[in-house]
Length: 161
Image (cartoon, rainbow, N blue to C red; front, side, top):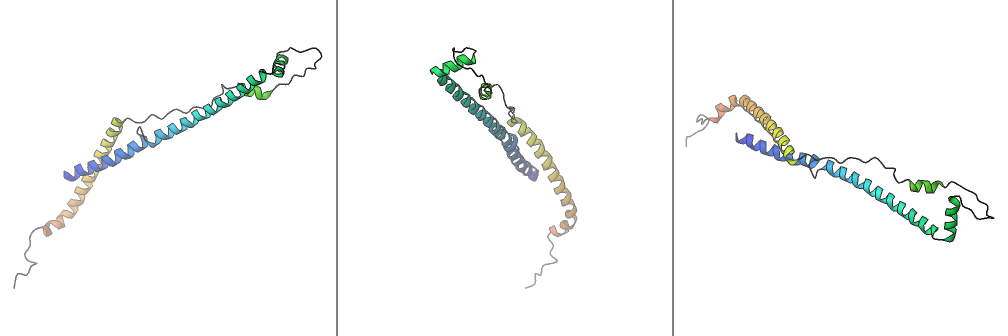
């Protein structure tokens, strides 16, 4: 019984540590999903920074007289005597399209500690039972030959002075 309890505790501690380290609240899988989500958020932040810089440049261009004239021409106004050539500026259209999103990965939900303890306890119980049964079976096979040797036998000793 003592070996059963010891084997149960050893297997439980090892399996619980390993299981929690992989799927627990601070485990590998949860940390990996957090790292992926963080990189996605950083990408979105960089994208918004570029968008802000583009809007700032557009605002600065509109502050000049030539910027106002270009905006008026873009809206269809023109000054007499000017030749107006209209070109579609693809870069302005692309910078305005901020609604495009990359696929957002979902966060991995870690296994609660109580659930992992229950799973590890069941695993440890099964492992300890198997270990105890194998050990008892091995002891029974070896027990027939060791019982003869285990008793105190005086035939092998020489007590003569």
